[in-house]
Length: 475
Image (cartoon, rainbow, N blue to C red; front, top):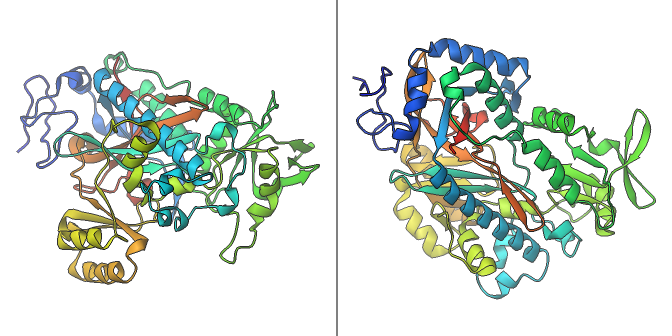
């Protein structure tokens, strides 16, 4: 039996065992949601979903998964974050990104954090995206990861925690903009008049950060988006960023080095490139035999000579590694001399025998992840997994524990989401976006809330039947 709130005609029953972002336990809207819920009272929710989907499809908003190209799905009920809470989130995100970039500079430099015993060297050396040839290669302002997207979750006690750090090639920028544009057009006026922070300058700020990554002495840099083509899951975004910034989008096959400088072939011949915005999936500099890949052969020399800027740099994926996440609080303390503003979800390094024993002893409370997994793949929610799957997992954990990490299961918060024309709770996370250029760190207000559309589902990735919600930071 659904509960009807005292201030709204909308019926809604929060899920048990999870913190609901918009409604309290009695079914009444939280104070900062009342204006939005009231504005939705007279709206045909089923029709709203259809119109939003149509608008997104007309914009071509899509992603590629193992099943092929699919429309990007946006639920029309935005998530609201109060100004005071956002101020703390913003501080915590900026702090974390500064520490991650300091760590990456240290990884490819002196490795002070290893020498001081705060991070085991194996964490670096065994990371899938560690690039040993990047040691001592110049990187503009020492910023290896200029664009970062974190994953935040709110636990059952209402505490926001960092679940993962997406440092290598985070996606979602243009999906966020598409969601905001469509909802501005489709939500009732009373909702769109709520005073929230704008995200309209995202692409402009990205352009500024890209130009700031240029080699020293280049005043008017030529910038391009480096993609591996429409096989990439976020190729729609690559095209959108290039179009909005009026810069070329190039593949490796279009790049050549002449006179020590990188050039891109196009209809008008060769044009010099000073900065590449790396958005590629497969792009290692060396293969398993230690020989240069096609990426290394094409790009390493201009990088080494300081004639090419890369945004985000090769090798930044060390900080993307799920094992590295376990040590980020130590990085914040080591590099910044500060306590973390945002707590992390408790993460276990299973190469440590004591940690492995502790995890196996409470497996039903754990989520086990492959270190190099992406897109929600390689994840086992142990309390929901069949016995046979757990038995196979335990064998793997005993044979190759260093290939996995474990995190304590978090009961993700829920948010009212349109399901068959009515509002039902669905689990969400938050992907805020960050740009670092030199010492300047800009956190985009809100970011993209990701939602798991299946009842009780915890996987919010688009490739796992997830989608997005607009995120409004209130003024």
